Image (cartoon, rainbow, N blue to C red; front, side):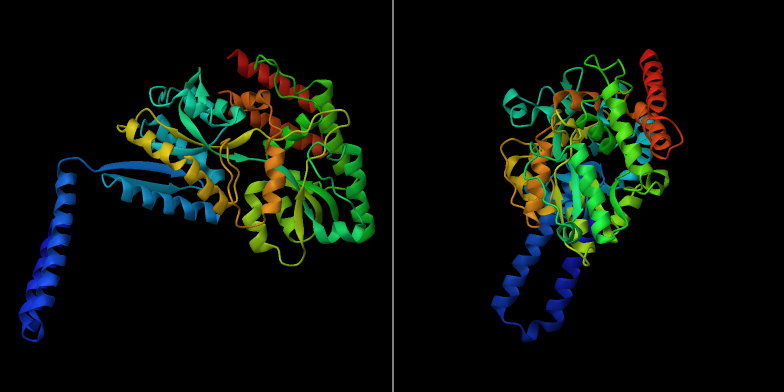
Length: 447
């Protein structure tokens, strides 16, 4: 096809010169001849490389966090292809909610992409299936030391690296600033000075009572906000051995009970945890019907574009009195599959993609957090909000990162969510619900 294009260019040039040569100056003809010759030479070189197998195509499957994120992916891919003319990156975008069902059949059929951007909690299960490449030969201790320890451990399986951290994901408390100010509520100024659970509940009720807003609080329906809430009460999913369930211990159950009371008292809408739409609570917040919305940093650009009827901001996650500030253990990693015929080339790409300069440019543009210790992204949109989420992300403990990274995690979370919904909607006692999850953990670990 490209060979045909080469000769088509040449034919067009020759015919053009024949038709219009009388009116053309000799210098212009020579200049045009040189330009066409360069085009032909470059095209012939590319054809020769393809015929010799020198052009390497890397398949990259990813999910975008927001439109600017996806846009900058293409910017960086274009730049890399210009720097490495023998590399072509084929990017496939799949929504986060459908990503696993798209990727898993390819893994099972041994036809995965070369590279995938994945949520950090997914990598362990792929590695346990024997699907990921061992990148030990490419990664030095100096490379490792550039990443937050809580994020680096999510790129390891049996102490062998299979990828590189790309982003960090933090959750905190979005708030309707217009309603909060009307109610006269003063917000905490740091993660360490965040509200206690009791103080937060009082603030949410106060906004409802003083402004008439429909709900004081709601939560993004996914396992990681709920787990972070459990962490904020001193609870855990698993013990230090990463096998023994702790989800039904006193502190974990107390955190779930706190949330069930919030729903039972009408501070939160019981319809959202029961909804099949994980974004139901987000839609209520965007509509101005919720004062505090507990969700993630990835919504920054979305809210800036979508919310026009009220001002909004972000504050810190409440914690039980006497406990430490908490956050979720999540982010996105770029991982490489061992079925790739070009593991080194794939690693060269992800190493370049996640280097200091590109991380600062990409994450600053997309309003996402960096997992690197040496970066300072300059955020183009709402840096005040990114500062809050960044401070909240710094609260991550290694234990939380480890338990969210085990290969069995994706088997545990469906039971966790199903039974949380039963508790939050008043259909089951919190202790009984978490006992069922603990039994499921034991069953999974015994297999």
